[in-house]
Image (cartoon, helix red, strand yellow):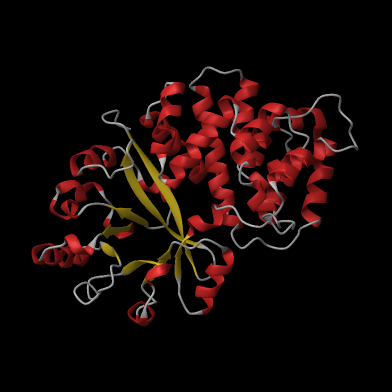
Length: 388
């Protein structure tokens, strides 16, 4: 990617009424959390492959109204892009341009301000804060993407009222944990079982496990259980594979396959975000020329940082059950140490609030472009290796 400027991106899932990903909301900001200029956006998008960011899902790209007048659109795939605009900034000429762009495949979403009369015929979607839901919103709820949801209960309320789309950042927010087991993808488990049984290749097995965060968590819990009583704590997937061997790995996979618990409705999204977060942290850790074992811990910190949501247990209980070492515990629970600081930066990046960690970036000598580069590599990695 280009090294001009200093930017970062946020990627937030858009969920449908089946609680599945239907697209991704993407915004690109500077260090003050302000949208980048059109020229800066063009410089970035020349070097960004949308397929590596979102796979086959559409991108909801938040931009200024100047974008629709710029040749930047030549670098944006019309068939998978929904351009998100603020309606009050549009002129009649802009509306005419939008109609022409819709004819060549672009779709448009607008942030709802209380009046849809002028934009309803050109709006494919409306972003509406739950605090602004009114009669007009209910009338057009098939186009509405609700934002500002703070809990699963609130999500279910609007789901029952017939809304179809939801900005999914609410599923990462703190909430009351109801303990439960998560049912992993049986396809992934069976593929891994065959791989271990027929061709015991530890590096390939490690890569398969690492791209499935629920498998990583279960393997660490298994290898650190009382049944093995190892003297030292096992803190990396590679170490777990080498110390268990083929026989014990096969036993673990069979146990994992048959003890499937109830589905987590957001499992697909949580798995993707936690895997990408882990890979981002791993790439950032490598920038500091850290030993391999610390880089491995960085991946685990990213994956496990959302495990309370994934598995339905508090993070304090999770780190205790997995018998994790102090570096990982401090990073996840207290955001302490280098890995904890990197995790904090990545979390704020995902939230679109990087200005809150600007001092931390300076302390570590990181540029936003370093973070963005790691993000893009992580997105590409997940799209290449993800099992669906």
